Length: 188
Image (tube, rainbow, N blue to C red; front, side, top):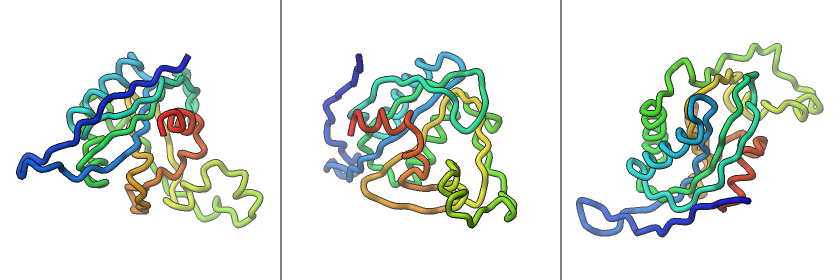
């Protein structure tokens, strides 16, 4: 049985003017595979609601095997929809701050290592078979994933498309990850 939390969303009010603040719709992917994983997700959602904006929808919790690396620790994943007045850049900084508050350190972070030119393929079939091609071509780096107590990814932000070195919206790999697409489709 799938349980989805639907909350009423009061219109945010700007503290300076008393008028409704500009509201943006962001979808965030959450994952945890260390510690009390379900509690890590719950704490992240509570902190997002306090520090980022109003959480208006939440998917069920989904369990998945690690993606992109080997680990004995299964993931718990969820997707939430949040109404926020934060810009995409400020949203990124706020999610990173919450990750640190919940125990994510540099040792848990995804590291991007340069990919030697010899590893890039110009063969269309090889490119089609590469699950990391999108990220490699957009970042020129190979991600090295690690176990983590919490991970918060910006999946979507309004209908914006952002392609900066450290901020990519929509998330470049979300369509390749069932642990993102299934919960996202549940609440969208």
